[in-house]
Length: 155
Image (cartoon, rainbow, N blue to C red):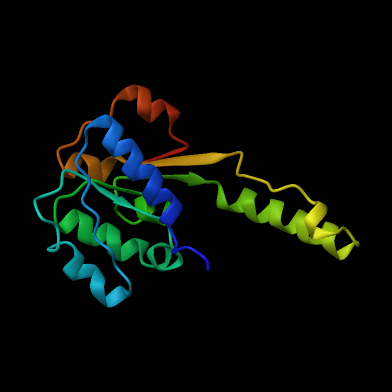
């Protein structure tokens, strides 16, 4: 049986939070109609929001960015449109590059390669997008060293 979208990410996040002494609050959202209510489901006021990857969260990125800003929460997501539509930042695989890699693998399979013989590929390029306008509106100061590493800064 397959795992839930984001389950691997959640386990890694739990491990990191525990080893760093950070208290993690997890709120599960199963459908878009649950998004607005999820912000009131926290046990205590969170300091930040991490949106785990799933097809629904990807599709709802703009709405999530809007809700995060409305609730004065700096947030991050792997979906680039999260930062592009008002979230503080996004960091994740370069999706166009990943699509190219998928196309190359499909071409190999169509040319007769056995899919089981092809190596599993992980993303090699990641994109950091920072929405400086949103960060400033939330009273956050992004260090110059981080801004210098960004692939895109939205001013």
